Image 1 (tube, rainbow, N blue to C red):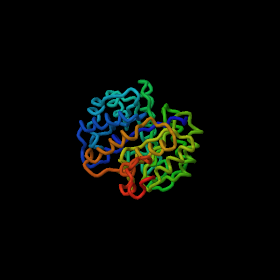
Image 2 (cartoon, rainbow, N blue to C red):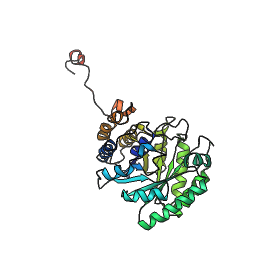
Image 3 (cartoon, rainbow, N blue to C red):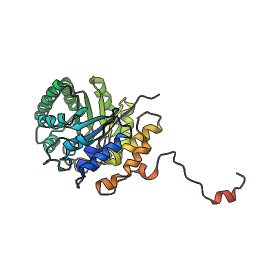
Image 4 (cartoon, rainbow, N blue to C red):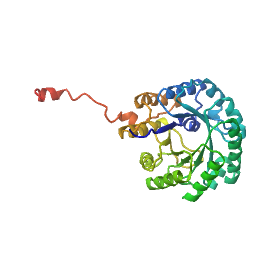
Amino acid sequence: MSERIEINEVSPRDGLQMEKAFVPTENKIAYVDALSACGFARIEVTSYTSPKAIPTLADADAVMAGIRRVPSVRYTALVPNLRGMERAVEGRPDEINLVMSVSETHNRANLRMTREQSLAGLQDVLREAGKLGLPCNVSLSTAFGCPFEGEIAQAEVLRLAQALADSGAAGITACDTTGMAHPEQVRQLSTVLQQQLQIPVTIHLHNTRGMGLANALAAYGAGIRRFDAASGGLGGCPYAPGASGNVSTEELVHMFDSMGCETGVDVDKLLEVVGTLSGLVGRPVTSQLAQAGTRLRRYAPPAWLAEKFPHA
């Protein structure tokens, strides 16, 4: 049997934060509950960022309090700083996700800080979370390229990842924030991160240039077993020009299922949830898999075949 692949469903946070319309709190809760029934290892529920910065997730406290928790699912939330962590603790997440950019320009645009300021701030959060026994994953944005700076040196990704691991991070996520990654780059970075770090590595991919699944396969071939994805391909980055949504969860799960890998996610249940997304966000949302169905979907043959080949 293949090793279990852990899928972290990020659409309730990474996806809904990008929507123009505010999704009502009760609808967010119902959406997370529906995802919980699909078999995910993790669901990133919301963000404890300032409501002024991300008004679409201003109801983080109410959402975390209202979801129905499934014991086999780890519920996570994004936390930007110590103040956010203090809010998050009240919501009882199983894990928190911290974020900074490998690109100096993107970090300043996205977080209004230099990288070294962000690093110091995250180390403060890691220290305080450690006292509470609260695990922290750290997502490194623009690990595969920056829309402002172009190529990102692998050595910088490794430097920041190691500094955060040494400070107590329970895991590191390398993010293709802008969909600039290509399979060979993903293979190389996935390999060296796993060789250098003694903590789990997750890969977060976007499908901006149509290479999301190819990049996921390259990461899998390099030994990665943890992936972020968003149902319906929701998401993007407000500080990454041209960056469309995340790799589609249903298509990622379907690919791994077809390969005989175990994800624990029921793709048929997930496709039912994806079918509700257009109503949830108030705009058309679909994916190629949602339109075509799974690869072994069967159709009735043309009626005229029975007449033309009566003894077949």
